[in-house]
Image (cartoon, rainbow, N blue to C red; front, side, top):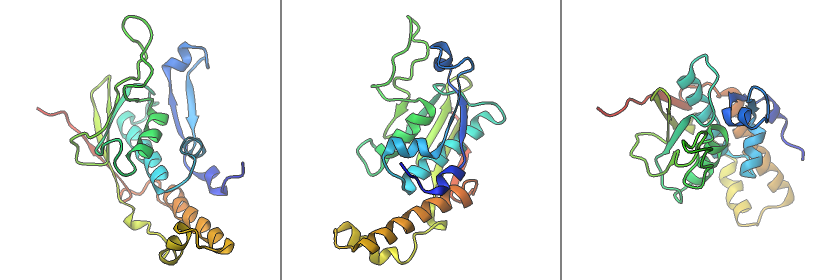
Length: 208
């Protein structure tokens, strides 16, 4: 499948999955995820997928500083319910990158459920942000939010989107729509990946 060229230039996320090492996937368990991986999981590329990818990237960077993040060692909390808005899409990307899963996740190995990822992804959380992540080993947490106002859609989309959505667009209009749609995603991933106005990160302290 041919993807837009900017996919290859988007930042990657490298982490270590101890379960992968335990099961012999690799000696180190170190894996690198790309935006293409997120797109393959979601089946599409959009500001929600890109935003979720960047949120997790920023959250893991803050939680682990200069250390390699550990997949399966982070609990994730989404503000929205699982069937609300784009929460499901965001949750899928969070699961891919962190390993955190709801009740359907891997239950672990042995009596102590080592490597369990089950019940680490929570919906409808009482948080002041779109997403929050917390390390299971240290308890350190971060609150994450996304503000795409600084990366607006092209004004031309105001005319194109209704026509495309209603299946009234011509072949040329459909192609133009796709180009403009991915152009916005590219701006988020390439020009604004480390923009603190787009991806907002702050410490999330445990309640007293």
